[in-house]
Structure formats: C-alpha cells, structure tokens
Amino acid sequence: MKINGKAWRSIWLGEDGQSVEIIDQTLLPHEFAVRTLNSAADAAEAISVMRVRGAPLIGATAAYGVALAMRDDASDEALNRAVAHLLATRPTAVNLQWALARMEQALQVLQPAQRCEAAYRLAALICDEDVEINATIGTHGLGVIENIFASKTERQGPLHILTHCNAGWLATVDWGTALAPIYRAHDAGIPVHVWVDETRPRNQGASLTAWELAAHGVPHDVIVDNAGGHLMQHGLVDLCITGTDRTAANGDVCNKIGTYLKALAAADNGVPFYVALPGPTIDWDIEDGVREIPIEERGGEEVTCVGGMSESGAVCDVRITPPGVTARNFAFDVTPARLVTGLVTERGVCPASREGLLSLYPEKRN
Ligand code: MRU
View 1 (cartoon, rainbow, N blue to C red):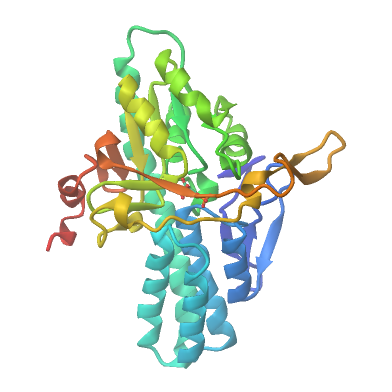
View 2: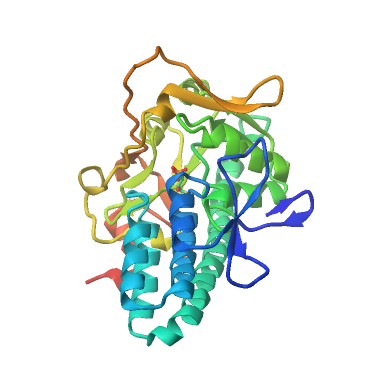
C-alpha cells in the first residue's frame, strides 16, 4: 500500500539481501519506524511483543525467521531449534504453524549447504503468495460490497461498514483481508464509511486501522468497542467485515476478542456479518472452533494500562486501574459459524460451513 505516494509492504528483505525489515507496529500511529531483524531470535521477539502481528504477517515473519536461522547455522538441530522457538511465540493464529511446517518440510529434505538459499526463496514466495491472495480477496469482497450497496435503495449516504481490530495491510504482507474489499470499493467509487472498533486492550483499530484508512483516504470514525450494537439498532451499520486468525473446518472463526459480540449484535439486527480469510488460515484439523481453538492469554498489564501520546508529544503507557489490581487478558474469541453470513476467500465467497469451505477447497475432501 502507499504512504505519501511510496509503496510499502509490511515485511521485506533488507538491501544486503539477508536481513529482514519490518514496520514496528508497536510505535504506530505516533511514529513510523523500520526495524531490522538479523536473527531468528529477532523474528521471534518481533512476533511475541507484536512489532508484527496479524495472522498472515506472523506466518511470513516466522518464515523469514527460519531463513535467518539457516543463514547462521543450517544444521538439523538449528532448523528444529528455530522452528520450535518461533512456534512458541503466539498460539492462536494458525498461519504461524502453517508457514513453519511449510518451511520445515521443504528444508529438512535438503542438504544443509542448500538450505539457506532455499529458505530465503520460500519465505519470499510465502510473502508474494500472501499479496496475491489478499488482492483476490479484495476482488471477491468487492462483489459483496457492490451487492449490498445496490440493495440499499431506501437510504441516502455512504455504505457503513464496521470492522474490528486490524485486518488491513499491516496484518498481512499487503492489502489486508477484511480491509482489502473496503480499499477496492473506495477505489471503485462506492461511497464507503468505516466504523473502526478501537479494539481494546491493544487498540489495533484505533491505532492501526484508523492510520491505514487515513493513509488511503477512506472516510472512517473510531468508536469504542461497545458502540457497535447501538449503531446497528439504529440502522447505522450496513455490513460488518472482520478477519480471522484461525477458521475451523466447520466455519467457526477465531478473531480478536470482542468479534463474537459484534456478530451477536449483527445477527440480532439483521446486519450481514462477513469474515475475510486466506486459505492458510483454515485449520482443517479442527471441527469445533469454540472447543478446540487455543486462545492466547496475554499479560494483564495490557488491560491495566493504555498506551498513547501526551499533549507534550511523549509516547507512554498510563495505568487506568487501581494499583495492584489483577486483570485477565484473553486475546481472541470464537464466533460460531451460524453467526457468519459468508466467508470471503481468495477462491470466492462461501457459506460458513464445512460444505461451504469444501466447495472452494475440494482437495481437502477426504
Ligand atoms: O493480536 P493481533 O493484532 O495479531 O490480532 C489480529 C487480528 O485479530 C486480525 O483480525 C486477524 O489476524 C486477521 S488479519 C488478516
């Protein structure tokens, strides 16, 4: 995507052809800073502390993390160590497992001397494929938006789309999942307006989605997480679109905490609720998302403190709770398939069900 006319991806190879560069998302929207990853440990740290985040970007970063490890030591032990270290960073987004399994399978059959070059090549391919996938999700999602816009004959004004967390280009290598259709619709001249859930505790909506949408010129307003139901009751949301970190084979979707409550409110108010996802986000081994998808629990300090910029321009965290309070921080929740109107993938749009997914991915039929 472009920032001030310059095209960016969220991850790329450094000028030396071996180090890896990322945009440090913990500093946005206050500072745009590029960081260099020089080792698998750097990649693992960037994923753990969420300098990079979002399911597809976590997978892409882990792939480059393996390549960095192979540059230093291409032995079997080093490969196993790097994969285990990267795998332990975040548990929910299945793209991490998917990318690491792909790297491991491709590299373990090679002689150590061949592994470094092959690892960089495969990591680059995973990134390029992600860009292609998300661009295609944008095309299919544009069709959904066009249809809903065409059916809104009774009311003037823009099409109001609600989204949760950040499923934009910062969460992927480029384009985004949930935001790709919105960018395409905006570029196609459909008047869209986005309600951006702030997305506590880390505020990926307020800090990242709002920043992305502003850079692309898409009209939007940030709302507190609890406002969506009220807006839906008053006819102010035409469509919800979110991303997903892991999609079960039955169509259940796991996304940032609070997504489920938006889907419940959407169902109660007859608002279509779509989820956009790349194929690698589907976990074909999980049949029941609510029972089986592992939910990350992060540190309580993300709940007791809020980060931001003070009047004087200092970026800092402030505590919002009494001292010594305990907090629990569940990072994701699962929205059952029955609350999802449709899944938007790179292969088209389908019902959120086992049959729906299999109609697009027939090779997964046993
Ligand atoms: O904790 P995060 O910021 O990694 O969570 C990201 C999300 O919940 C996104 O919606 C999800 O990864 C889908 S993004 C393409």
